[in-house]
Length: 350
Image 1 (cartoon, rainbow, N blue to C red):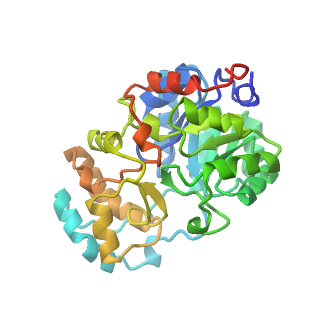
Image 2 (cartoon, rainbow, N blue to C red):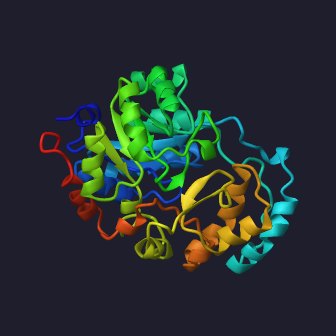
């Protein structure tokens, strides 16, 4: 039994990456049922939706589950703080292409973190992971009180040390190869682009808690490499995102299947924060226009036409998040992906 399996009460030290916007109960349950830790991203979820989602997860599996929340970095904007007219004008062709009208600006872009945390602690998942920051002392204490393990996410050694000092139970060391948002919180993400192979062993040496390697891991070879670097487990996103159990659209899964090692870019176009994905018409048009609202305003704006595009199966208007190992995404069943990853575990860790 590894430190991580004992910590989380799981059979194999493999964690499903939490997807903001494209998590699914079937995928999280499949990973948990297979012995790993299924995760579900709660970005933007209201308290009622959080409660309902965790209830669905509990009904789908009797194994440990994790949920994920975004910690505030302090640079988020409220609707009253920003004039979105120039951005709306620049993106008007994308709304038209999706067949939706320009939206009315809401009173708030996101629910409060405090309300989200209250809902999570009331529903009591087994693990709560956070990105974009370190949990405060009150959150750590509440997690301990409710028997919930806390996981923080670092893109640098300095961030990992902050998380360890804050009292998390494990640290995800996520390299620049990873898909989705770069979750840096001490420096600008563009200056925190450390690769997984360089990051993981340095984080292992710097912290006292188990380290979970993430970024560029898609098959047994990546798992074996992560453990050779001292990781106690791995977190995998893109390989699972391509499975039929995920909530990714058919267009997104097709883009993953066709991707190669050079087909991802880092862009702020779709959310206002730096993220890795497969470029498409929406990304190119937004970047060419040069009008990108701050986070979370930009994410809310593009979310309006992305929702319509997902229904229509129009991949050119979606956020096609993907890691640099997308070219290794070849399996369409979550159980098969888990079996492939498990084959890379050291014999004394499985």
